[in-house]
Length: 141
View (cartoon, rainbow, N blue to C red):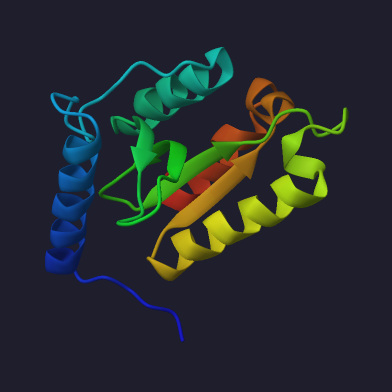
């Protein structure tokens, strides 16, 4: 069974997440306030999505009420997230056993909370593949 949060449940979830973050880091920024995206590739993708749709991505969005998991960036109202996996050809974290299992746990929990997650590589961002996936998910292509 897939759990889906109703809008009022999502708001309550966001309040819990925001509260947990403030407890850990007093004075921290609002978790849904736009923050600079650190990765050049992800910043380009977010800018391209904004140019096509007008939607603003939120970087390092914490989506889980109890775990510290964050999406690389997310479109909150659309419940669409992007995760960029680097180092796939060099034995990076995302392709080694423990990292792969941790990613599976994180993404499965995201799905159970009603999120759609686009996974991509830096190369897919550069060649436009990731943008096409995001636009298709938004029904904008």
